[in-house]
Image (cartoon, rainbow, N blue to C red; front, side):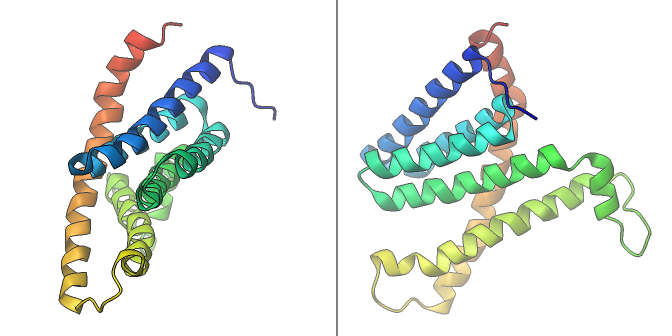
Length: 191
């Protein structure tokens, strides 16, 4: 199967990539808005997946990480962008390849299907993916900027806080993609 990408979609992806890199650069400039700007940049990675497909989306993601590593002064922000964007990438791939019927099959417990609850199983997948990305980042990254010992209570607070921020981040992404992106797309991309 050959990948065919129209010139319009290629140009649009280039503009998205430029905006993604601009947002990651601005995250170093406006320190108080760092997470918001990095989250917005990662949402654009998801937009590219939706518009261009998985193969091109992965290329877009890798390009965004490489360009941000070259152009963004604060490399910790690049690592944060790469991690939160990885969540979007993994979830977009899962969304593409798992249909509702497959989710229902996977959500079967003791051969009794979870009726009308593939979304509940999908949220479990989301939490697992998030924590597989977040927990190693949480436990390995303090050494990058703090050499002392961190108390277990601080880690517990960061774990709980991370879960809350994740829920808000994921809900905001869903709202952005489902409501706002559809409106923006109509005004930007005209077939």
